[in-house]
Image (tube, rainbow, N blue to C red; front, side, top):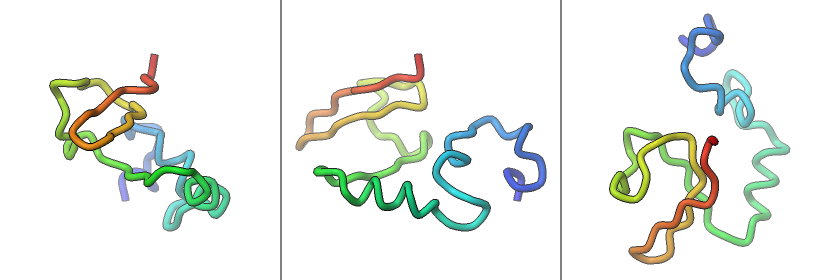
Length: 74
């Protein structure tokens, strides 16, 4: 509810690019589905690779036990 009622005070706007108030944007869902890789979105409190990188948002590629950061906020 915080994001809906007062979005300007919410610290992350990434969801605003991919979701409306209640559902994923169809264009975004179609884009992710056509990617040639399995895609998972992970909240920063669920990120288990802090030794690799610990600043967010990021795009990372995991292959087996190896994790490589592809894109950083900077």
